[in-house]
Image 1: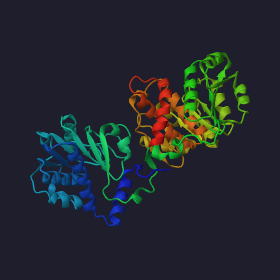
Image 2 (image 1 turned 90 degrees about the vertical axis):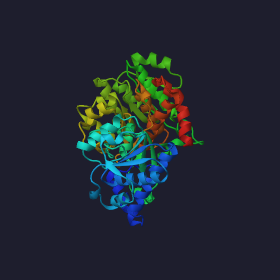
Image 3 (image 1 turned 45 degrees about the horizontal axis):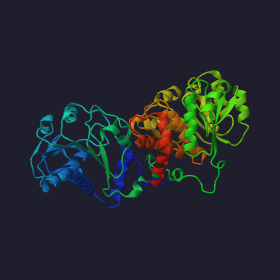
Image 4 (image 1 turned 180 degrees about the vertical axis):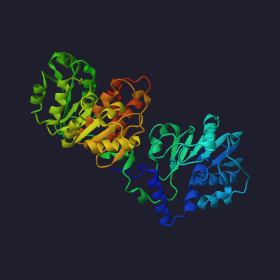
Length: 489
């Protein structure tokens, strides 16, 4: 797995990385100098000299601010620095860099923003753990309504680096410069939407400091095996045969899923359709095969064909007892499973029954949105990342916890956060297509985690390729372009 550079470090892991850098011979003073220099350089690349105020907090984030102010002033910029707290109480590396500033220092208050055409937010970094209050809260609120662009150091102040949650208030940044690796809070909502452009700067931390990290940003580099396309020596049966259970009423859902499975790599796809709805399915599909079934027994008989390698249930399935029987029949086969939508809600009252099936499957992927997730798992403590991880362990399945910041988590502890998804995906049938993409990748030989990660990214890329006005069926037409884009990354 090509994960180098994609690791997302929690706050504690970033502190450990800084310690590793210092142990390797890079002093804390140098790390802070390098961090401030990276921010100053990013500012100079994007803006011409103009009145700028650096808002410096009392800790290491503020220390970066002192470096930024000094370097920009040395370059001829009109810089002011406003300190939150007392200069005499600064410690360590921050005190060292503050002592190198020879200009005036004013109090960090809303008035300090007057006349500023750029604002550097160096108040608090990713390690903020409690809500802002008092002067800090007032200052961040004032920054949030000021018209000048904000450059955030590490993260916009008020955003928790581990969860992405806003603790009291946060200002929208035009640019965020972070160091060594991004944090989960850069990608988890709402933090993701407050960062603006994100730059990750090398400040001298050794690459080995991220070697044990198990959280990643979801990009094609994370799953190269799933992006390379079909085996040139293979044939349709070696690429897998997906069986999708269709419902009697919402027939479009399973059809979207089946076509997406073919587009994304499955050699064959069959819809098991209720006999009374069979004419609708059969008339609509060309590449997808349709098999009529009368009941659970008919579906079970169909499953005697061992060539069905992935069983997908949920899209348009329905919420009656026969629908639940189909899921239980699929779970008893020992095949790979992709369960979405109704297949999850059917077990809201007896989730352990579902988890017994997913734990027994050779590979299983669950794709709930937050409402479905809570019906199955209840209120799970922690961030969205924590919730997905806990659910993956409990269910023994790869969890795709959907949303604008979809989290993919495996039972072995690996997790990825996806930021590659436009808001146009919030449309009916979009999730059915996602289930189909994951199905196709799983059928063609990808691991469950890689299939889920790749499916989520490709889903977003297909939406970006189409643009405004997207409806779910459009994703099927742009998916080949998305697959090509992934192969080129």
